[in-house]
Amino acid sequence: MTGTSPFPVLTVLTFWPLAAAFVVAFLPKDSQVRIATLIASVIECLLAYPLLAFRNEPGFQFLENVPWAPDWGLTYAMGVDGISILMIWLSIFTLPVCVLCSWTYIGKRVKEFHVCLLLMTTACVGVFAALDLVLFYVFWEALLIPMYLMIAIWGGDEKRYASIKFFLYTLAGSTVLLVAIVALRIQSGTFFIPDLMKADFSFRFQYWVFLAFFLAFAIKVPMFPFHTWLPAAHVQAPSAGSVILAAVLLKMGTYGFLRFSLPMTPAASEHFAPLMIAISIASILYGGLVALGQQDIKKLIAYSSVAHMGFVTLGIFLFSKEGVQGAIFQMLNHGIITGILFCLVGAIYERSHSSEINKNLGLGKFLPFFMLFWGLFGFASFGFPGTNGFVGELLVLAAAFKFKTAIGLVCIPGALLAAAYIFKVTLKMAWGEPTSVAGPAWHDLKKKEWVYLIGPAFLVVYLGLAPTGLLNVITPAIEDNLASFNARKGLVSAAAAAPSEEAPSAPAVDRSSPAALPAGLDSALAAMPGPAPSGALQAAPVSAGAVTGAAASGASGVPASGASAVPDPGVRGATGASGSLKAPDVLAAADAGGGPAASLSAVKGVENNG
Image (cartoon, rainbow, N blue to C red; front, side, top):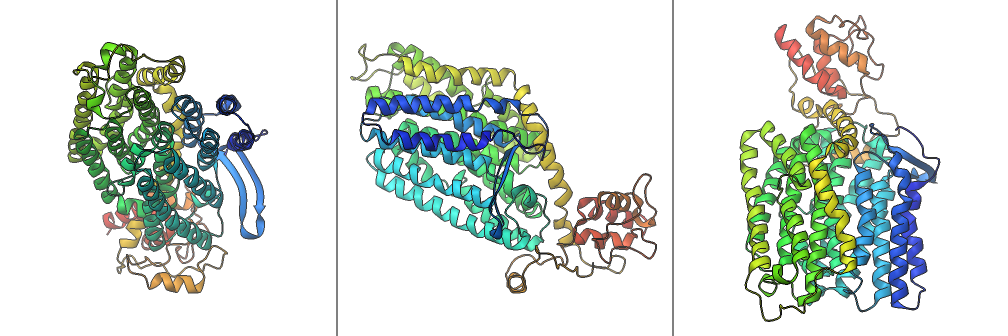
């Protein structure tokens, strides 16, 4: 935590679109609705100006913390770090793009459509700014209704099927997410996300919470095999709906893995990492193969999203600085590139009234500027050097090869498939034999289309050639999160360690604090199937000095230079008579939640010294 904002910029950014929606709802004419929504979107972008004061350092900034329901432990808490601030910027600048690309595309129930756009912006910004679990869940669920309406009312011929499928999939994930939130509250006594990110939970508890998080976030990403709702939703949704889905909605899943899964369930995250890597690779290869066989442009881009988001989840669960950097960079890049590709598909649909590839051939002759932008964003989509897509994908691949060469090699075909399906559709659209509907009557880009294409095109080139500025924003938060993760993931090793004569297991720890499990829930969890608990995994954390001294002294029991010889009083039964940590007792301290510094370094000391 680095500072409280004197001006509630996050609250203003979150609820300004909601206030604008209330005004728009009373405007009588469609033209007034469009203009008012565009003005509101521009004002939203201007209101984000104070976020430029964000400092490239770890911790949350622009904090707002107001009691909401103190008796229930609820607070209205908002804040951003280097990860969430990028997603907020992306959400804010997506709104004017959606308004402009829908200017002539939407011809019925215009007022209701723009109200849905504004409501979705409120929900999107709220999700990335919330620091209270219940507040986060409110915004998470609030996005469901306007997105469902956007598909169901303004969608294509199969809009009913697509909207219901989207609703049911997302609702299923939200239900298990709510269960996880309630369990975290019972276990920790708080809904405050920064506190939960530092809390230590037993491996058994983390195991089940991670699975709940996984189902909720994997559906949102979406990861294979939970992806089946996405192509239908993209194809049937209007252009603006597809843009929001691609640019913002999918990022909520990967943001959830970064914000909740890794910091709150570090031991379980490491335990399930092989499975997550395997599913990510499956998403990359499956998405690329299926996209290669599509004849509908929107379906092709939809399946490409499955592949691209597979690179994001792969980077996250490699647990390396380069991997997470590439994942976050790719989150932003995918939002920019794929969002605009859907805008371009909507633009061509207005001209040909079809998104089929075979009905949009030979456009290079009649729409040269359109094809120029399509080529730029298409090349960025498969990671052409010099574009922003190249940087994120390169970082993830570098991390994959560093982690294990075989994983990197398996990902290479995914990158090649991306180039194959983009070249396929681009060559046909640019130089294919024109159909009967194509001709000189087709007009090139309109003024409003130039407006929403220039900015993203600049970002594609700028972030591709000069990514250092963006990396400087996200790196402190990444390093802080990974340091916390690496310091607490040792619960897995502690849980798997069998007691021996030299290393007796830690005695049970008294948990009389409000965060302790109630007796009923504790016994219920003990009866559940799954990995066996490691005993007192929920002990109070060992102080930094005690852990450092224990790790450095090994079996000798002599504290290292500069390290505190006095253990943290919260660790019961982990000290010898002299007050310093002994080698056999170090394992007990590790089992009590001391982290890898105790559980790995100290174990080596025991082995080396017999």
